[in-house]
Length: 245
Image (cartoon, rainbow, N blue to C red; front, side, top):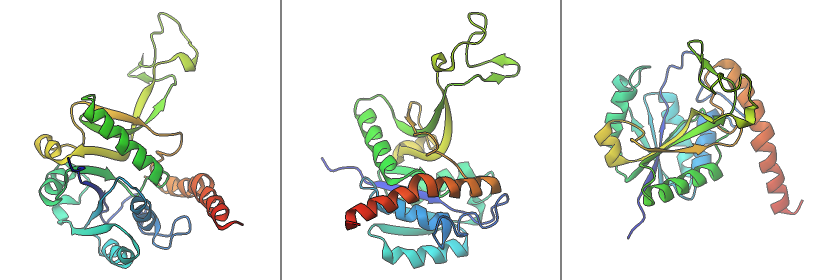
């Protein structure tokens, strides 16, 4: 039985309101910023067959055209209609991509997750395939797991305070926060549900900090520092070892 085709979908619209030129301004030594970094990360993921960048931004289009010849995987540039590129157009975009992308499995990801590295994509896609085969899940979401004290509307949601007012945090039940680094779903199910996740998503726990999402200007500065510390320097050491330095 042939392996299902996996397509990484990268939405990258123009007009970021919180960070000017968020997707394309220089980042972590990459001239073309988060977009260039993410394309190179996805190109290194063994379980991904092709990449689709969907955008209405001429700058993004030009960068993709520039970088595409340097990558080993097929990179499809989708000229997204403006009607599917507003802040509240996610539902429409899901339907649009369902009719546009020819694939079996969609791995929906974002350039704003620079610490979600190739090894994590491969691990998540492997976990998705295993969970689906075992009929334990119909989709996957990358999440940050936390064990901390939390309230909603003045009520504890992290623990039952009538049993113990302040239990040890390591004894608290985990709370899962969607970090938006990756959503995986079979395309037919996405089309049916008009959603990036199904009824029973596998929660892929992302290692600490690696699900970091860049959404504000301060995030951009912090994300670059984290990338330099957690990823870039480590890759440099690996490259030195391979080169025999």
